[in-house]
Image 1: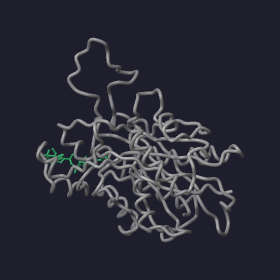
Image 2: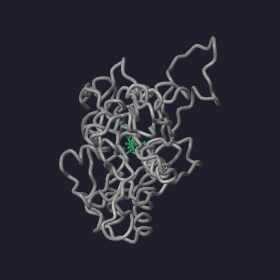
Image 3: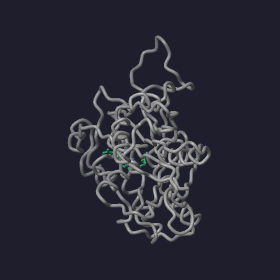
Length: 333
Ligand code: UT7
């Protein structure tokens, strides 16, 4: 029995905001953003669109590619830090209804930018645990533009909106030995001592909005960029090494690494430490910036649709983010 990806998709808002456009609103420049992050543009959701709208688009594309109807799904798992509504209902329930996935359970998962990596492993485990469960839709979606302080040049240049989705199916292919396929293993990690480094302080049960309170700013994502940078390089380096060690394979056997697209310099630093050639990492950060939980499935879909993955390729995803969380998956395509 193997857990295989049968379809991929993405939902990207049409509005594209270039670095130059941003530089007319805050004190920054195309040169600074590109040289410090590798970002050239980001896509921003319209006022009418929330996380579920982008997620539904990505889900439909993934289902189309898999040749499956939404009715055949047993579960929908969504990694997001920007759900349509806080806490209840889950964005997964909204997507379940919009898709008409009548037989599917639905839940959101909060693991920051690592949400898709956590989602894949969660979905795979739930497929294994019950014989009748066959298909799970896993989505990473975030609309970070809604929780971005657009006057803070230290964060607003980094983020974009988007969704990415995969359909996971339990198949009869082997998951061990010759001809093995699908999701081989994952690492899921966390270091809650760094919780303050990426935080949406207001709006939760710790600091709820109160009636009568004058609100002079919306709930925003606060970040200690330097601390997250250092954590990210170490988390990426350790996770790549540990995935290879656990699976007993060398880096030369990995066809492509799909990293969380937060900053091209983080990826380059981790690659340099491990002696991995830059071309092994797939980067599309220049076009989309950091789309949080969506960045890995969007990249996976682009790589897949452009013919960049062949059957049998060993593919690695690596992520890190708010929590702090980190992790990775090893998949045979
Ligand atoms: O998904 C996970 C979430 N986040 C991340 O992964 C982010 C991790 N951190 C980073 O990617 C980097 O730390 C940043 C890109 C956020 C910042 O890059 P940096 O090279 O660490 O810059 P810095 O914060 O040390 O700032 C250097 C200078 C400062 O000026 P002074 O004090 O040297 O005069 C900043 O004020 O750059 C200034 N600066 C900017 N200048 C122009 C900061 N942001 C900007 C900007 N445009 N947008």
